[in-house]
Image (cartoon, rainbow, N blue to C red):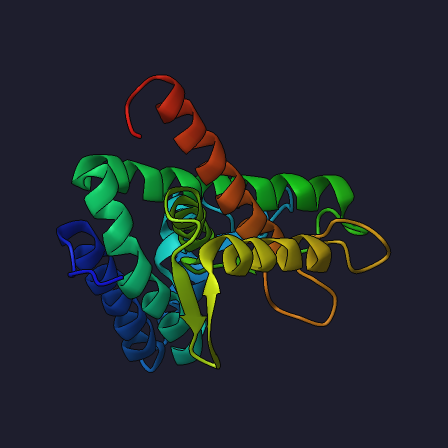
Length: 213
């Protein structure tokens, strides 16, 4: 299923790449943008949390592979959803699912972590990207997709659905609790679940109001 790069997706790609380049450039000058713009635990006193981090953390990435993996997904999948929803609604969808991912991560971490005030840094576009993937699964469930490291065509409803199940399962690791970052990993699985959940709810809401098919 071919797609062209669309305006909002193009600007999101540029913004994410520029933020990463600024991060590595200014790091050598003693300016830590990762700490400044990534999300710190708002429930921990002195963690470094600032309200703007709820938004800015969506455009920060920890390393080149983190950036590349998210941008590849955004490049190949998001233009199809932008063409389906239109530029303004797609931008709203992207931001809402990203914020929803962050909200779910913070809430679940605060309620179920062994140490609810442990510090963390949450960063990356994967929460919003999970929302985009959910939209693709809902609109094009039988279109076949392939992972770069597993080049076998799989229907979107199975591939994306399987990835979501994996995030849910991984989120339950660690003392049997539904934690934000799975034991032994640095992946915020509950943020992925949150992005997908908000994506499902938002599209369902729009459909009921006749805003989108």
